[in-house]
Length: 210
Image (tube, rainbow, N blue to C red; front, side, top):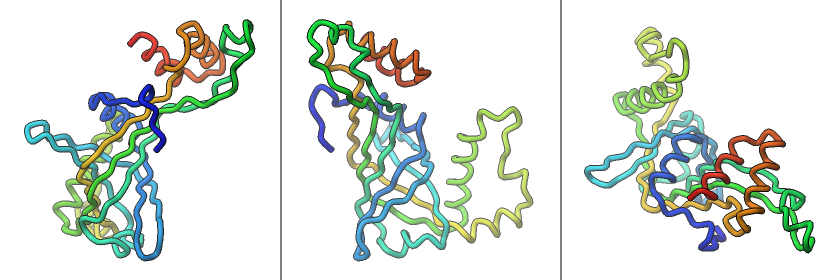
């Protein structure tokens, strides 16, 4: 990833927050069959005592990922946050010299690590429980695994494979108009708000304030 220093995000708390807020990611792997990409929702598990971090997810057993690569193979997982088009018309200084062009603002986090595949029922139940609790939390009446018959869940578990990615390296690129004059960055916020891009506008505003 091309990474100019001005756009590098090194704050782990911000990187972890993006993963938690935008958990649907692209897992990229390489095998004798070539490059492959799988799109999965992940759950980030932090062990602050041991200063380690793990991503967990699951795939269908029919997915060839777990047969194409072995445990401890290197993978790349890409999380994408807010993103959107930036018009040069939003820069107030454009009226002075017209020396601006369109661009794109975005937030991405790249995670590199070792993948492991889990097949035992206890591990699979643990992964499903963690994912379910996270994504059902916003529901008025959250669904939980115990709502379904135990035999049904056990049968469903036979059709999936668990995934763990031990995080070895995490890199963030937050391109949010940091390379612009403050007046132009504020113009970007206003332009995005007018377009209804509230999330990206808020992200740019945060970097103006920081």
